[in-house]
Length: 177
Image: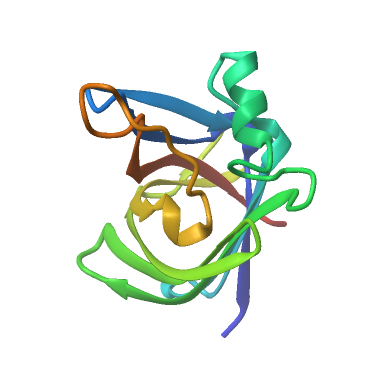
């Protein structure tokens, strides 16, 4: 069986997150620079190997002061740990379009097992003859598991930031020629 490789189409993809702020709302952020590839045997996505990397300095919440703090050693420490990486270890098919991708996520030099819930689209050809496929990816992680422990107590009780981070990605890939 032949190996199939899919490369990220970054211009049609976005990777973001949300975390509770003041325990009353969410702060959303995105990564501006990231890469990913999928390698599998033929058309079977259950055999896929997924690799994803994001540049920590490309992180943005559209607030320069907050972004600087998040990129500092208090959180991501982007200078010492310039990338975040995910590498799949196995994939479980739930139905024709829903998969659970098990793998290792590394943030700030700490690697933990995580599960991604992935909804796969059908393939389509664009007007230039390229075969494309898209995935909607969601996951939840605890930021403190990755050494992202900075927080501040609130006068009213509770803390400034929630520990749960919701990850949301909509990514499109192009079949390598």
